[in-house]
Image (tube, rainbow, N blue to C red; front, side, top):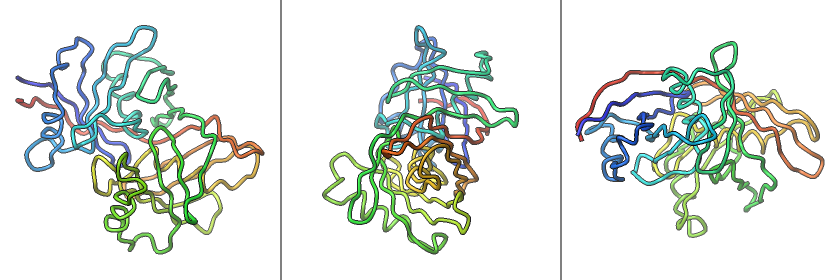
Length: 261
């Protein structure tokens, strides 16, 4: 069976996207997804997405991790699938789509980047001096120094496989604040990929919320990742709630092709 695919990346976080609006690829199994995402025997990607039709919305985003298992929400992937939707004939400036964690808005920016509205966050849990929160996917945030030389894979795997998180898994983000209060650097160990990815949208969002610089009101945090720069905008209330959370960044087509499954 031949599958027409498209390869995209958002700040180095790369994805295979398949247009499934005609339900041609409903047959895909987890093992097939895993093979497609394999960097040696397949196309190679951090995940795979199906663009489906959804009544009342512009589209539905179905996301799989590179291990073939259904994934939770993916911030970088969502920007890529919006760009793919635009180039596939769904031409709009503002989008409304559904994903595993609910309804999302998206908008095209004048500079070509794409903004995704993330879910509100009501609680940030303290965990032995670190932080846990859910931004569509569960994230562990640890503040460190000398992040460029930090062993993200070793330390990330230790936390992800700890008995507290082993059953469901958790994404682990290591964060180094900049000397400027509105800038940080983030490196992420992703569950489902079981490795470091060049960036992670929901992880970047989680790190930015933890590193807010205004106690109340509007915040904008610039985030540097190995794969590029992202921005997170949000409002913080006096009781520690976060709303109007937007993730801004690039989404680029790499190539397209056909693969036999």
